[in-house]
Image 1 (cartoon, rainbow, N blue to C red):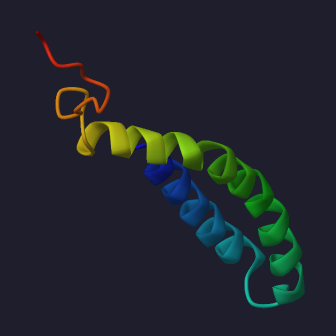
Image 2 (image 1 turned 30 degrees about the vertical axis):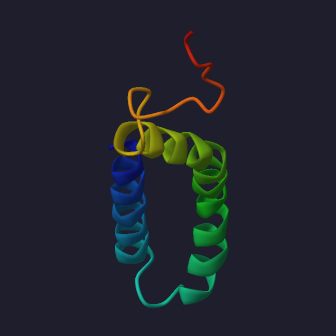
Amino acid sequence: MLFLSVTSLMVAFSAALYIVSGQENNWILIPIAALTCLPVASFVTLQFSLLVELISSTYGRGIFGKQNDNTTART
């Protein structure tokens, strides 16, 4: 949900920036958009491994499905 929230925040910010700056200041939109994407890119980079681990632990093989190869035969 946090990824969806950050994405919608960036879309809303970009739309507001375009509406405020208008058609006459197109040259300023690219540097501002690049600078605002830096924190989002760092957030995604830092949290992506956590998201992958969360999905694999939720939908992947659980602790009950694992079989140990080092089982000893009972005598």
